[in-house]
Length: 80
Ligand SMILES: [Zn+2]
Image (tube, rainbow, N blue to C red):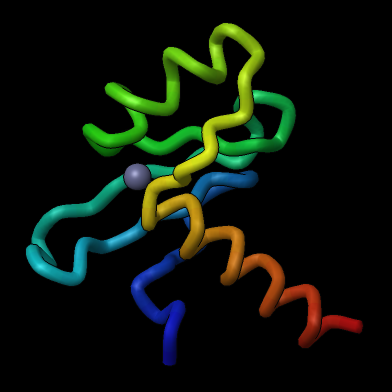
């Protein structure tokens, strides 16, 4: 399964486990930035957050956010 490293946490937040370091977990909050989502990883904090704060949608999205979006899409397919 492609998205089994994503765990729903609480009210729009998800935990994404690192594939390389299973002990490392990133928190993704899909309520942030008008539903664009926020991640706790270094890539997001350094490269994406500054753009989002200026209202720019970053071209490159971190792996965690992508994984959560894929996971959500998968859940919606199952429920409809
Ligand atoms: Zn991330």
